Image (cartoon, rainbow, N blue to C red):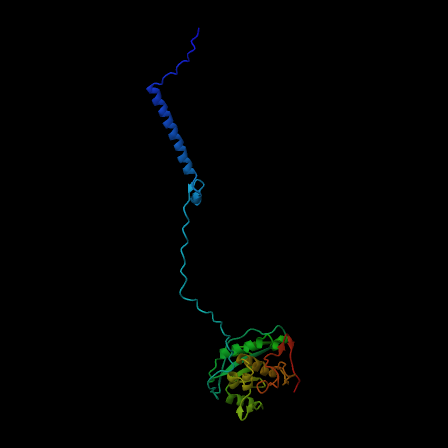
Length: 286
């Protein structure tokens, strides 16, 4: 019959005990290794910014501070408009040598259509003025816009000496202007002094005194000298073209170019042009 005694567990041998110990140690080391790996892969919340896509990111370097300039920017000073020249300083020669130098350049035709009239430009020797500069000023005055050629019925052209011409525009000292104007029956004196310019047949005579200093009431009205020069050329050439003196049409209105603006304005405002806005501008006939 079978025995009722339980079988005794087999005794472990020393070799078996050593094997079990080795297995336990290996299991412990493996678990420890996994913990280290997890620790490396899962950084603390405070180190989150140092990891990007599994790579340690470099902290951005701060931008270098720009030291403020110790020198303040210079203040911007607005430019004042240049004041117009109303008269030239210095003495004006009362007389020259009596002879004239001519602008030797032929100019282009001024005007679109109509009769062509040719003119020369001359400057008295000893006046201190140059024929070329005077010729340029005359050309600007007669070219417009607003000059006599704007009528569409007149053309003007400056010619060189030796060419055929209809009249001459002279710039003369006051004593020579008195002689030239007086020969044509025109007295240009004011207070005994040769003062105004004139036109006599074939001659437009511009008084050097007025060319350089304008007139006191026009200076007071702030009329630029260049504007006065436009006026005096168009006024005297207007006489050569057959126009007579005109009066101021009313206080505050533009003065007609044929008004004697060198002597008075009579409440009008200075104006150097016979045409305004493309239309002939005139005042009451005298």
